[in-house]
Every structure is written in structure tokens, then in C-alpha cells.
Image 1 (tube, protein in one colour):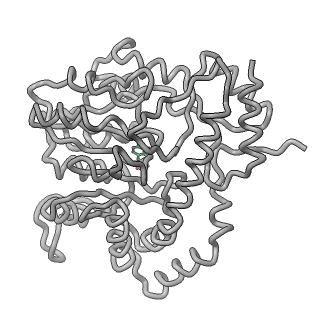
Image 2 (image 1 turned 30 degrees about the vertical axis):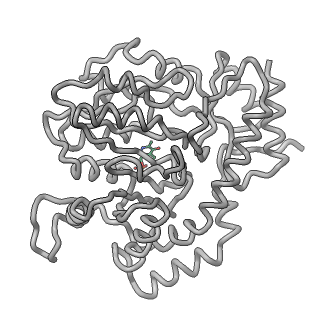
Image 3 (image 1 turned 180 degrees about the horizontal axis):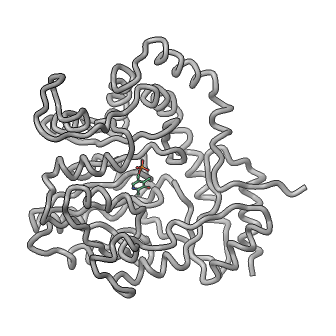
Amino acid sequence: MREHISRIDLTRDYEAHREEYREAIERVCRETAFSGGKYADLFDREFAEYVGVPYACGVNNGTSALHLAMLAMGVGPGDEVIVPANTYIATAWGVSYTGATPVFADCTADTWELDPAAAEAAITPRTRGILGVHLYGQPFDFAPVKEIADRHGLFVAEDCAQAHGARYRGQAVGSLGDIGCFSFYPGKNLYAFGEGGSVTCKEEAQFRYMTMLKNQGCDVRYYHEEIGYNYRLEGLQGAVLSVSLKYLPQWTERRREIGRQYISRIRNPLITMQAHPADTEPVFHLFVVQTEERDRFVQYMAEEDVECNLHYPVPCHLQKAYAHLGYRKGSCPNAEYLAAHCVTLPLFPEMREDEIERVIRLCNQFR
Ligand SMILES: *Cc1c(COP(=O)(O)O)cnc(C)c1O
């Protein structure tokens, strides 16, 4: 009997830790600590410690985290922020929500991460910062981006939505730049039972400002300092995340084991792997490969009942939502090539050995 292999299966985590999750949820319900509050605050402290920064500001999702981070960096109408063309679209939303303009830069041909040279070429007098993305759990090349930013007086923000626990030259993502943004969307390496996100920062003033903004623009209840947002993290999500965070190191280790197996054992000239530079410790949120025969490959895997999907089929600069910015095909050729040839293989911590073996065998047998 041929079994179905999903790209990701969250039911196995819930089954494994059901009692702990239920107890955490029960505590929140008993104390009715639903919006913000004790369990959201507790998770903030635990997550800050995990990332190795003084502050983590829990919010209702990763997109809000990006928005608040841009506001904390002082981004507003008329400003530009450089973002990679190949990322999930929400990276750019965070910039657009402030009234600023995302300026899309290409990725490199081998790491598929932000190309520092392309970022530098995109700088104009309006540029305020660079918002890099550790896409697929692979840290982008931070040092040259930071060097360019310093030379031009720009901030560096990190979109870590796919990279909880990843390291660059030994240092955790989210602690490298001026500010870091995380998502806890179900399926991310650390996820809530619903929606969640966090902004990590080093300065108390930034933390306080974002805490005020996410809380309807007030420090003191019913006194509103400026137009704010309802971006609070729910207590239930904080409690669930505190349970999950304990397991994140072992999940990450398992993702790495599976990633390493794919890298060393998938040997097919039709399949190209992402480059993982030696000074990075990726966390394999998504295991993306490239193949010239992408559509045929997806079809072949589907016929074998193995689910693969695409991250992402259209790069940001060619999305209809950003048509007004006037990008054309050819603006970011590496990102466009990636969009046309990427395919994501199944990878999640609870994958069984027989499933890993089957994915590897099918990849190697593809002609
Ligand atoms: C998931 C994701 C986001 C958005 O996070 P949400 O919690 O879904 O709002 C932003 N950027 C990247 C790179 C993501 O993968």
C-alpha cells in the first residue's frame, strides 16, 4: 500500500504533546487571561531569551510584526525600504502599511537569498533601510548587508518568519540587525494554535513604543498617545507557544537531520539544491529545490501521492498588487528563475524514516 506523504503534518505534534497543550489552554481559560496578559507576557520573556535579545514584543501575527517594526524604525510616507523580490508577500506589506514603498532587490543565483550587491544598487536618497529575509530558514548574508547599510546610514531589519533558531556566524537570527520579525503561523518552525508573531529588539524605547502601538496606542488605559492598532498576542497563543518553545530545539535538530539527508543523498542532475554557506546554520523551514522540469516533477510526485508545493510561484515585484510600481519581467532575473523552477519537498520534524527514504528515492528516480 502506497501511503500519502504530506508536505507538512501538524497532527503528529498535537498527538505527541496533547496533554501539555490542553493543560496550558485550560490554565488560560480558568484565569480568563485571554488578551495579552500573563501568558502572553511570559512567552515574550521566554522568546527574547531564546533569541538572545533583551526584548520580544508579542503580536497577533507576523505581518503585524513587520508593520510595527517598520514603524519603530521610523519608516513612513515617502520612504523606501529595500526587500528581496523572492519572499512571502507579507515582507513587503509591512513596508506598504506605513505608506512607504518597498523596493525589490534580486537574490543570488546560488543561495536564493538577498544579494547584497543588488540591495546596494537599489539604494536611492529615499532609502531608509534594508529588510532582509532568512528565507526557507537559510540566513541571508548579513555581514555585507550590514556593511552597506552602515556606509549609507540605513537600518537593517530581519524577517525571521521562516528561521526561528537559525544562526549566522554563530549568532541567532533576530538578534543580528536593528530589529527582527517573527511569525507563529501554523506550519512555521514555531507555531501558535491560530495566529501569532513577535518583534525582537535591543532598545527599551523601541519595545515600549511597539507595546503602546499594538495596544490601541495607549500606555495608560483609555489615554491614547497616537493612532494605534489592536495587534496584541492572545493569551491562549502565548500559553501554547510556551509549550512549543520547549520543543523547538529538538524539532530544529530533527529538521536539520532531514535536511542533511536530502542534501547528501538526493543525487539527480535534474535537481539543484540551495547553497548553504559554511558560516550559516539553517533550520530548514522549507526544503526548496530547483528543477528545469518543475511542472513535470510536481505531477510525478503527486502521482506517487507525495505532496509538493511552490514557494513562491510569483515573485513580489511581479505581483498584481505591486503593478503600480512598474516592475517588468527581467527586473530581478534570479528571483524570476526561482519562481519558475522552485519546488518544495516534504519536510517536518515528525517525518518518519520510511517517508524520508521514499522522498529521496523518488527524487533520485525522477527522469
Ligand atoms: C509567514 C510569513 C510572514 C507573515 O506572517 P503571518 O504570521 O502569516 O502574518 C512574513 N514573512 C515571511 C517570510 C513569512 O514566511
